[in-house]
Structure formats: C-alpha cells, structure tokens
Image (cartoon, rainbow, N blue to C red; front, side):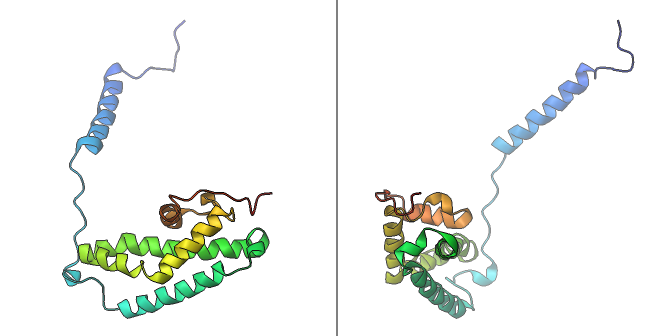
Length: 170
C-alpha cells in the first residue's frame, strides 16, 4: 500500500545537502588558517603596558596569599571548608599565572612572552611549585581537583611528579 501524506525527499535534495556538508568540512579542514593576532600598534616594541606596576604588586600579593594556602596544617587539607580553601588558593594562583602567560604575548608579542616568563619564574614561584609538587606527591590533591586554565598550568608543574602518599585517601 502506498503511504499517503508521507513523501520522501527527492534524491537531488539529499545530494545537495550532503554536498554542502562535505564542502563545509573541507573548507574548515583545508581552508586558509586564521592569521595570527596582530599586536596592537600602541604595544609594539614593548614588553608590558602602562599599568604593569599594579600587575607586579598584584603578583606579589598573589604569591603571599598562595604561601598562606600552602602553609595550612597538613591535616586541614583533606576535608571540609579548609580543603575547599586549599584547592581554591592553589587554583587561583595557577589560573592567574596561566592566563598571564597565555594572554600577555597576544598583546606584546615575543617581548611580552619573555617578560612574562621571567615574571613567573621568581624564587617565590619556584618555591610555590615545589610545595605544590610535594603536596601532590603526598596525596593531598589530584589533577581532577582543578579545571580550566588552572589545570593547564598545574599539569605542567606536576608533569614529572608521582603520587607516593595517600594523605587524603578515604
């Protein structure tokens, strides 16, 4: 029996739809790459902007806050609000660090990238990284506790670390 009211679309329409989809995929795959972002004219030849003195002070305060986070008693890092504060403190530090390392070169090019790399490699930053690695190795947190930009940077810091302890294991 013939289906009245239900008509199949003509093969020609299906072929055209298929061709459009294949064409778009091919264009996205093989088309010209997006041009790299241009450094704003006002920033060319500079490593940082006019408000860098504020950013330097902000990084100093961020490091101090992160040290307070890492100085928390070991026993308070595993549960409750103190654990949330511990994870949030580390997350905020690595979030800011990752964002500045990623975004600064977009505004200031290679000079900005080199400057920002130097800004985030102070002895305080190295100490924060070592304390973070130690807490990770002892089992006070896992990479799954972090997301977004923070997780990118913390993964770099922890790339050669192994968990050898079970401090917060249930």
